Image 1: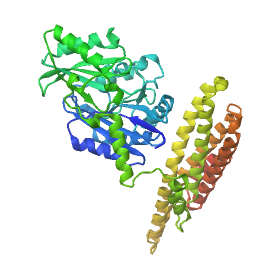
Image 2 (image 1 turned 90 degrees about the vertical axis):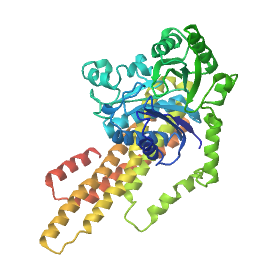
Image 3 (image 1 turned 135 degrees about the vertical axis):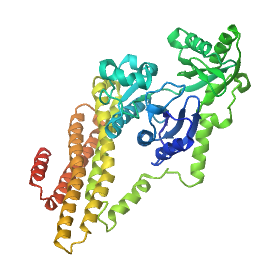
Image 4 (image 1 turned 120 degrees about the vertical axis):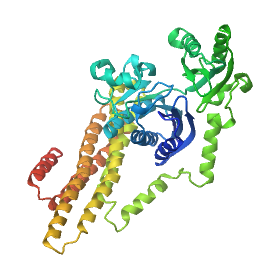
Length: 501
């Protein structure tokens, strides 16, 4: 993979392994996504899944997990030691290779918007993706948890989501998306069930309490083990090393007459985070070599190459199967799919030109608008890519309706109605393709005056592709109209077509 982005979605289920496995299965259904680790905690009733993928694949993978969690989990019945506001509680994106924090911000924004559009789950943005300073910290967004936020979101404008309405999803709650540096989830277990002591230590060592920099901490009770735990997120281990945190908690515990009986790393940890800190010194109960992020990543990549599943193909190789399907003597994929592909390529070229220009300080005056254009083009690109599949699927319904029996008058009338209904549905996707392509075309035209002149040829190609997608979408809408008798629907369709030029 030329780009590698880590995603660490946290789901509010840590006791039912089958449910968590079903969520992971959904996440991995798409291409270029790999599972590195999964952690289930029964006391927290929470699972932490670590995946990596490309810049193009990781957002859709997260959305598949969000959708499956929304269908499987009911937060009104959830109980656990860890704070939460959603079935999918938090979804951070982390740049690993060939990607920047800004790339991850754009992915988080798109995933947040799509989670609302597809699943009606209101979403918030945090860390580097936050749109207000107070929302950089996850604990501010999660204040009051699901039960408190469910009431406050309706009456307090400051608790409104970044995407969605002032109402939580009835069972899936809300979800927080963000972009951040590598985070270490690190817990230290005390040799006492005194959760008040764990909370006092957490308050003293965390950044918000005037303690260590880049440390978030809380005290929780591990009922199953009869222990109290200082549960922490280390947001910048280079500023505050893991050994420093361990020493601080140990000293505070000793001062209160308690001891540290062990620590645990939740998820993966970079190799350099362990420099200078011997594993035995940390008393890491669950440590093994595969917890090292680089080790596990290398292992997964090696296994993938060995099994022949690596997708490191030439560009021609990657698209060869689709072109072959397009050339086959079948009705699908056809012109509608090709039009959607052209539109997505136009948007992608626009994104590329925005990205190249954002690297130039001489164009700094345009950077703010270019970031907005790039984010909008990313959404259009994904929308048009989805239309490639939607177009083929919707026309399949038309063909199935045409195969209905037509022996009697009743059968013929039922067949005509079924074809009309399927044709209406089939027209919606090319309509959306044409409209998205029109919007892409508008942005491409605006980019000409805001971007580096060396990319003028790329924008010219993008403009031609967008026009092809617009025209192709319109033609595929019109192909469905002869089967439709509903005059009101046809009038509205002609009005929409007139707006497309």
